[in-house]
Image 1 (spheres, rainbow, N blue to C red):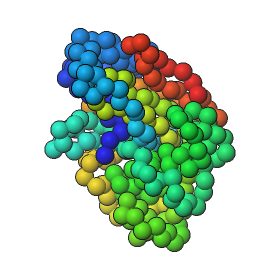
Image 2 (image 1 turned 120 degrees about the horizontal axis):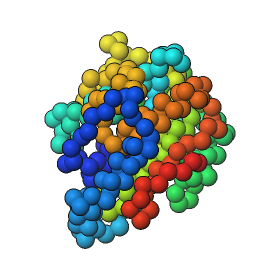
Image 3 (image 1 turned 45 degrees about the vertical axis):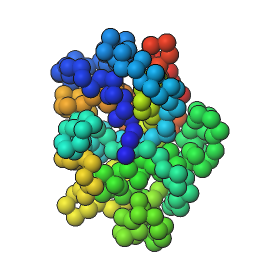
Length: 280
């Protein structure tokens, strides 16, 4: 499975710097990424990829930021990439992955709020449809289930036969989108062999209808699932775009702990080798 992890195709060989959480600033993190985009190693990598692959259209992907705990002591669900994989082994990440074709047609017990859905429709690439907007959100729900075993939804009979949704069927949980809000968006810079247009959603842990007996039941892609404070996560083995999102999360938790559906969402993209941020 792939998602925003592709951001580190152009940073994985660079040395990881360590910061204290109190020293981390959004501008510093954005500047780090822009510096990497323009480093000789990354520019050479991008040029070679352009020669080999031409223009690579970003694929839709979704990531879930699931938050538990009180407003004074919030924790976010993260896990470490399996150490046996070649791509980002051991990195601490949010659950997430590519959007599947069937995601948009899954039955749910609660739809996206009208405001959240409209914000997706207003900003999606290409031909924006309600089914496409649902697919973005449902992909995030599915990835949480696959990578942690936590099922976001409501108790009830669920009969969809696809194996990707087997846990929902076996545990009588109908997926729900009503508690998901738009958090952010990021597109992998051009010139890379793999690119993703990743939508980050945020939700409270109270949206989880089923917790496995042992707390988590991951599929193997993520290990050491944990509820960790954003400040502590930044000091761990987190990669560049993840660090940016953790700083954005700290800001969001301070100013909008209830996750309103009209809170401005930061959108990160690259133009002329500059890493840009705007609100959508």
